[in-house]
Length: 388
Image (tube, rainbow, N blue to C red; front, side, top):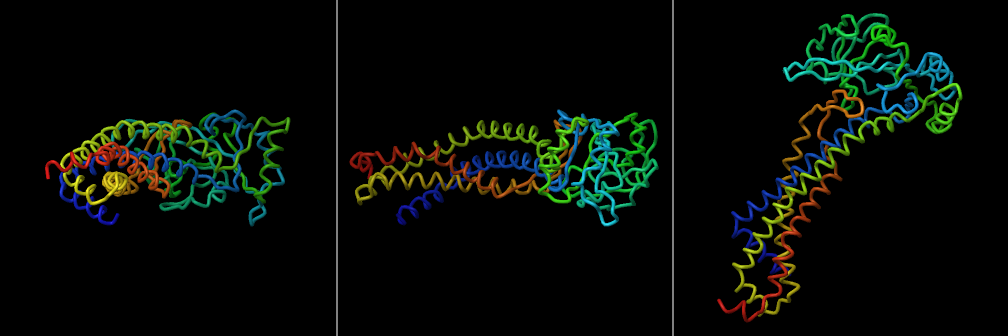
């Protein structure tokens, strides 16, 4: 078997041009497949990482997102009294009543406008989100028309930079800080005092309530009590679950798009591999006859030619995955289908995606080589040796 391996490898080197073109065709397919799946993974990772496992999001029942939710002050007061809520070092409950609305801002690059999330925050909002780090300026003062913006917003929209002024909600707001929330959705938001945001947008109700559990095991009990309380029309979810649901629609769309495009491109790659392998069989008819005369079985001949095709597929997969890995350094912005707001995120390459990509490249190699390999293995020894 070792002799056939070196024999197959030598023939691939002999046919450098066709081998390279076939491998590059497969590499292109794998690149497209990997890039789109990485895009979907990056979107989902960004939104899931936005949540904290021990945080609970409370929104109005049947609301898909915070933007569509509404919680009046009386119901918010009832939730605030839940004994399952954690207490901070100063003795205050770790709970934040927040407002979430959308506004439209013009992009700095002149490519039109986009929706941006405005979040009215409470005193505990920062403590509940440890991933938030101030990178420029300071925090907004409570009771003032001051705001802070995520780093993805600061550089992307007009008048959203540090010390600039934005106009929305019938007043001007001064940007006093820029924060970094890592690879989370919060980096694409604008934050300000909820008590200033509510009258500015003429919203008498909160959008959501966020609180930290004192014991993570108490989630099911607090969820049941909130959702069965006849005074409330609310539902509770772990923050990680809430944001995972926010990403499902867009991530599913991207994965379907990626699979569809890959299937179309892969047909061409498989046909190219098949043509290459059929040509290899035709050019090596006499060599196949010699191998059969030396005692190599049909199965061994089939395995040798199939090995060549799988090697082409694997080579193309590694090349495509190599170039796709550089997509991780690119930040893209798109509209979140759940909230219709701008969301910035990165491509994300995982071990699972790498395995899927290489497995798909091997499948293309197998599909392109199996028929030519069968043809080579079924050749008659006498007919194959006629040209020797």
